[in-house]
Structure formats: structure tokens, C-alpha cells
Amino acid sequence: MIHPSYVELMKVVNEDTALVGEEPVVNSRYSIVSATAKRARQIVSGDDPYIDHAENMKPLSIAVKELYDGKLKILSAEEVEEKEQELKEYKEKMSLKALEEAENKEAEPSDGSALEDSEEEDEDEEEAIPEEE
Image (cartoon, rainbow, N blue to C red; front, side, top):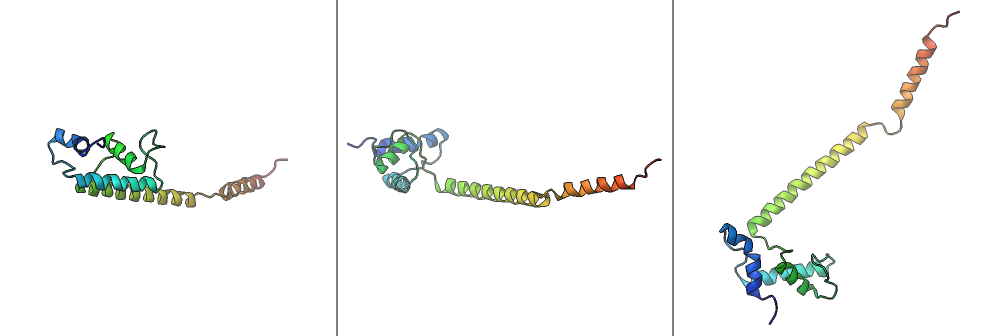
């Protein structure tokens, strides 16, 4: 028998919804298989495992263990949309911040020309003062 079983995985994944009284995230084995297969493909593509001591494990075994240990979460369609919206807003905020920083850098003289100008003004003021005899 494979450990953990589908039933055990479904209990772990739906643990949070039982407390709140919401509809379970996972209603079928297909959802578990789909989620673990997707995560296994991510690991094969180079993503780091979320668990320790995964060096000698196969990608699918790593994905199942991550799900069972609570390191991996299956999101409902509504949660996916919410996370995507949050990510979109965060990216917009960061790009605006980067734009503002770039504009501030452009506004500041970086070659020291403002300093040179003020030094020249000091020299002019010294020449304008009449000498006393």
C-alpha cells in the first residue's frame, strides 16, 4: 500500500475547511493526482523541494510528501483568482515604485555639476568684495 493514501491526503488538504465549515477544497482523487503531478513537473524543471532530505526521492514522492506535510496547498478557483489579483497589484506597486526611484535619480545631478556651480558663485562673491587699503 502506498503511504500516505488518497484518503489521508484528502483529510490533510481539507483540514482547514473543516474548521471553518466551508466546502472541501478536494472532493476527488483526481484533484490530488493533478496537484501532485503539477508540483512534480515543477521539481523536474528545477524548483527546489519544500522538504528536507529530498535528494534520494523521486519528484512525485517529493510532491506527495510536501502535500502531506502541509508544505504545499491546493487552492480553490476563487483562491487562485484572489492570489493572482494580489500578485498583479503587487507587481504594479513595485513597478510604480521603481519608476519613481528612477525619476528621482534623474532629477538629482549625478556628475557634481551643482557643486561646481556653487563653488563658482563663491569665487565671484570673493572678487566683488573691495579690498581695504
